[in-house]
Amino acid sequence: MMNYVWLGLILLGLAAGLSKDFSESWNNKYRNGIPIPVELAESGRTPPEKDKSKSLEIKISPENIEQIYGQNLEDPIIIDVLISQGSAPGTYTAYWKTPSNCPAVWKEIAQSSGGEDDLTGEFRFVPGNNSRAVSGELFTEKTGYLNLKRITNSALDYAGIAVNIVLGLIGIMAFWLGIMKIAEEGGIINYIARAAKPLTKFLFPDVPQDHPAIAAIVMNLSATFLGLGNAATPFGIKAMEELNKLNPDKDTATNAMCTFLVLNTASFALMPTTAIALRASAGSSDPALIIGTTMFGSFCATIVGLITVKAFEKLSSGFKGFFSYLVSVWKKLFVISLATGLIFLLFSFGLMSGLRSISSVLSAEMLRTIIEWISALAIPLLIALFVGLGAIKKVKIYEAFVEGAKEGFTIAITIIPYLVAILMAIGIFRSGGAMEWLVYVLTPFTDFVGMPAEALPMALMRPLSGSGSLGIMAEIIAVHGPDSYLGILVSTFFGSTETTFYVLAVYFGAVNIRKTRYALPAGLISDVAGILAALYIVKLLFT
Image (cartoon, rainbow, N blue to C red; front, side, top):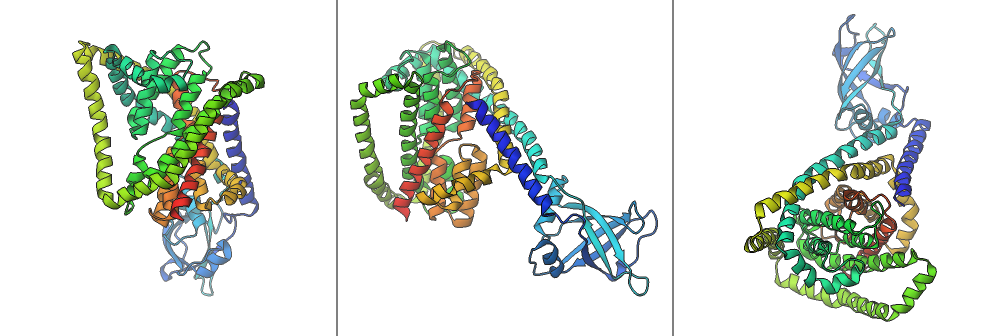
């Protein structure tokens, strides 16, 4: 499955880039070979001496800019152009900086050549009546295939980003796996596993309930629930490593691995700390307003993800086994459906009303302070608990920590090839413009469900890129306001789903899993459920 997705991302990105380059070349978007009439200042009406350069002050009228580039400007463009003798008689090589009011295409040309505002081209004098030129013609450098250049740069940049992410993970991985090793040798892991047995036995029936994987899974899901991303990732990788010890086929994902990945992509969290922090910095009157909507969205994503992953699990043994499974668990499914419906109503009306009442009693500043305190205290208390209990159990805590830290370093390095592969493909997909194709294809569906067109790129970007979706969210909040309908909607999108492709690359890459089976489609279905649930609850409460 992953092979086809990876190939599809790359081919779609290349196809989109090539088609845009062909269209831009056909329409001569960058006006190659078209002269731009300019007026010369008094001091620049004579050519430079041979083998010397000369600075000219030129003026381009708004009418000429509109005629050539189709862009309306209020004021003329005035720039200093440095010219020197060109290869052909009467032509001069020109260098200039793009002014703030220049055509948008000039900025694209400058960026494609490696500079932010440097442009090169060609200049010609237009002779006047007294052998002194009063005007001239400016040509920008010949430009083409900018989208393919962006694809190349993006692929290389994302490969570097992948390595930097892993380098940042090395310290975090070493630290948390060192702490986990202390907990393991002190027997704390067994206590955690026994406490979570009723839930984990249902979710992971193939995993022995006293296995270290169970405790790592519980720690990962707890860290995710509290919004402690730095702790969740190392615990998740540790869980995958322990699950792989039970795996008879080391390059193929087990059912337990797929279930665990879907729980992480659903990302059921109490506090979407990143979205709350962004809303607070944007001046929201109630940054924590999205806690309830995010919990609802991520809860729906979790339920749908679990149902999907269990369905895929049974379908993998054939339709006969699948229907036999449905017959055997129909009572459980009825109870789950009923409970889900009740929770749905609770979230839609009762719980959200309660949250609004709390918001009316507690100020936004007080809510933010409570969240900050919980986030600040959770990790130190966890460290103190594990290390303290390890010392009480007479564990050699220093040696145990170092042993676990070494393991964390090795695992982090193993992730690099997988993360480079997936981020490079995402970079090609994004920079080539394939996202625009996807938006176009999905627009009829999103119009049908009532999703604003401005929010669709956020919904599509979230499974692909955390930084990309964060940037889109920040831009929408800056334009429309953090407490607007759109601002609340994209904030809820961000907290209700996770970067599925990143999670898959990191977790499966850590244990060299190449055949991911149904993990990716189940994760993406969970993402879709989270997005639709977020759209429903925000529309219900804020429109």
